[in-house]
Length: 205
Image 1: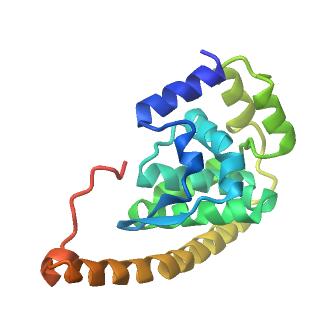
Image 2 (image 1 turned 90 degrees about the horizontal axis):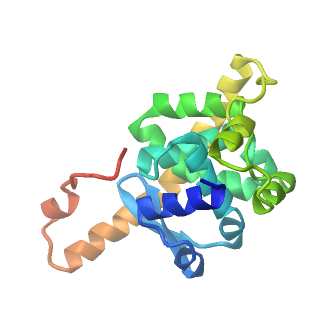
């Protein structure tokens, strides 16, 4: 299949529309136990297709853990240096992954340090012009296709800085959201214990 066909199949498997999400004013983002609506900004529109192709190429899922993994991988490839706003969005997803599966986040980050992403203009142009004929060719170009230019010790420090910042962002978003949720549910007549009772999740993976 061509990359366009691979992407269409990915959207179909995940139940995603390929255009409706771009028109919404907000987009739900995993933040711990909540899906928090955040502004659907232009930067997200511009890079969404390439982010989704990262999912396809790496095999990371679109669940809470998988979004954390692909975000850790993108940070390892240098997404923060390409676009700080894009990197910040990676940190939001990374925070949830760190809570659920921190070792998998570290492995994804280290894998990203030896990989390339599709965010630079030259790479996006190649995708749009169908430079790579299929998914194996794209994977050969992206995945673990370079040597990590930095030693492991520096990468550990870098990941630690990302993790600390991610958890700070997580707290700034999640705490007000949880408080709002509790107050709203109690106002709707739910008991306090029902409000705080954790729900069984089927979207972690």
